[in-house]
Image 1 (cartoon, rainbow, N blue to C red):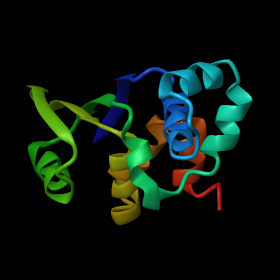
Image 2 (cartoon, rainbow, N blue to C red):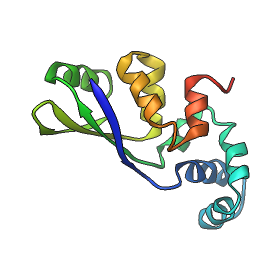
Image 3 (cartoon, rainbow, N blue to C red):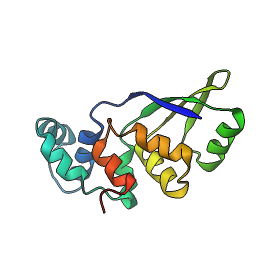
Length: 138
């Protein structure tokens, strides 16, 4: 099985930080987003406080991968989580998409080879969320 991140929502961690702040701030989400976009250090601080039990803040994004796998491996993934969207793109080639909540929850429940590939694939797109999911943020 081989997994490659193809594309993702822009500014994933800024969007997550915005989502976190909307519960405690009276400011409009667009105002919060624009303020955070200008202050990446603030985004890192806020996202560093992510908690999986508030998983809805991890839903404001989309990630898309190319997955090279056999049909049985795909079926296993589909049976383990209904939140992956999987489309056949060719012989043993699939397009898989989900949000970071699905990645985090799948990794917690199924720390297998596929899960580890998912986590490693988000390292660049969402480094602070990556550290949290991986266990670097305790």
